[in-house]
Image 1 (cartoon, protein in one colour):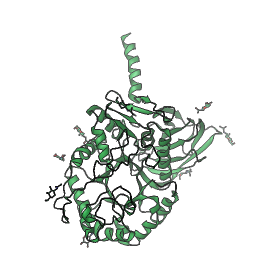
Image 2 (cartoon, protein in one colour; image 1 turned 90 degrees about the vertical axis):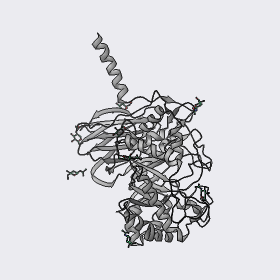
Image 3 (tube, protein in one colour; image 1 turned 90 degrees about the horizontal axis):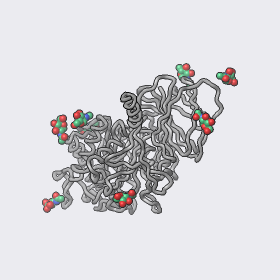
Image 4 (tube, helix red, strand yellow; image 1 turned 45 degrees about the horizontal axis):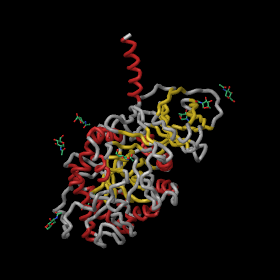
Length: 507
Ligand SMILES: *[C@@H]1O[C@H](CO)[C@@H](O)[C@H](O)[C@H]1NC(C)=O
Ligand SMILES: *[C@@H]1O[C@H](CO)[C@@H](O)[C@H](O)[C@H]1NC(C)=O
Ligand SMILES: *[C@@H]1O[C@H](CO)[C@@H](O)[C@H](O)[C@H]1NC(C)=O
Ligand SMILES: *[C@@H]1O[C@H](CO)[C@@H](O)[C@H](O)[C@H]1NC(C)=O
Ligand SMILES: *[C@@H]1O[C@H](CO)[C@@H](O)[C@H](O)[C@H]1NC(C)=O
Ligand SMILES: *[C@@H]1O[C@H](CO)[C@@H](O)[C@H](O)[C@H]1NC(C)=O
Ligand SMILES: *[C@@H]1O[C@H](CO)[C@@H](O)[C@H](O)[C@H]1NC(C)=O
Ligand SMILES: *[C@@H]1O[C@H](CO)[C@@H](O)[C@H](O)[C@H]1NC(C)=O
């Protein structure tokens, strides 16, 4: 009796371990969040290899499923449903990673939680019971998601030698401890790259962090390159090393009246800066292998601005890849990325920033919005189907207002923190990224997949362990029977549930 009773408990417990369930909450925004607190947080178990002939299917949907696990076997039967054809022989780009940004706002919100809840949040992003984020962005100094603008030097008078350069309280309290915890939770699988927003006012033509004519003074080109190098050195002193660095966040902003701090570059000036300053400075340093990414701005720079940079063979040689943001994607098609890839097949393309709630008429935070999750996953599928090697979100955690941000640029985030209640909310956007980050490790390659309807976009990968991952978005408000056909395995017959994200895995 006792044995039987523990067996039952064990079986119930086993379910809990497999996928600790979502604690749903509906805020009336057409979808639900999962609530996490000191006592509870939904998890998803690490992927385990299935034997050949079997598959695993993970479903998240508007009705409330979150990484719900199903299993099945391939069939050789003739089936009549709409078919997605997978061709493992046709391969495309290699994947670099998935993740978000360690902004000051992210640190402030995570630190506002009790240590138990904070650990649950970090585990949700970085551990193998969470999304297993593999690539994150670290701002060099402040951004609009800081409580004030700042740089690493004293700005009372020009300091071209950077003698006053030092990391800030923000680095020591909001970034470094969280990055170190994330590196630990990810078992050092997490890679990082750095991007600068704010240059010292004395380096700039307009003498301000933000605003029009935000170009660098020519005589400041070398100090600005040295500034990047100093940042890398100071973080290395904290045992944090960087895989990559961008030429700077959104140069286009500093040609507008935007309050977002930025440094502007004409293509000629950026060419000169990379050629004479940034390239030689980094390649001659102990960081000589760092991946240099140019642009770090919207698709409208592609490929014309890249062409203007790569006219110079040295610049083309210094630059390893191109960083792209998503904010004007409705106006600028993904074919711009494909043309860029076709011109420069040796350069990777990485999507380095995205967020929602940023429009003038948007509500910054929409708790539970399934539509926002769909926007994320459809962008990831579209970008990866156009040669993008990874996709990064913006702030990893914001408060209930979508901040803090010192210029009131409040937006949404996949995790919203409620410090008062010591809880946080995982939005559908969190699961949207997770349907990739959890299952498609660095080093996977995209493989050919077909798509039978534009409202059911698909993409597919082969993992380093030879597993195949198929990610499907069902935007229809109804179940859709489908067949996945892989000549080397046979057919999978399944139903996509209404308004769902699906990841199918087989070896
Ligand atoms: C599948 O269809 C093909 C051609 O229509 C037929 O030759 C074959 O016997 C069918 N297989 C099964 C298992 O029904
Ligand atoms: C993939 O390549 C293998 C070996 O060359 C071949 O047998 C198979 O037919 C190919 N599959 C497809 C879908 O082209
Ligand atoms: C900057 O330098 C001035 C003059 O040396 C000094 O008074 C001030 O405290 C310094 N400010 C910071 C933030 O270090
Ligand atoms: C993570 O931290 C634990 C405890 O401090 C330590 O034992 C472990 O080696 C660390 N893991 C990594 C990958 O740094
Ligand atoms: C960096 O790592 C070394 C060796 O593990 C350790 O001794 C040192 O304390 C670490 N430094 C910091 C700032 O964490
Ligand atoms: C290193 O610096 C030297 C001297 O400034 C320069 O000629 C050389 O091109 C640089 N090396 C690289 C790899 O940029
Ligand atoms: C945050 O927590 C407080 C205190 O429990 C509660 O009053 C408030 O409604 C919560 N906010 C949200 C968005 O749930
Ligand atoms: C799909 O749904 C239909 C209708 O609900 C059902 O008859 C069928 O068995 C389902 N197919 C699979 C593979 O689950």
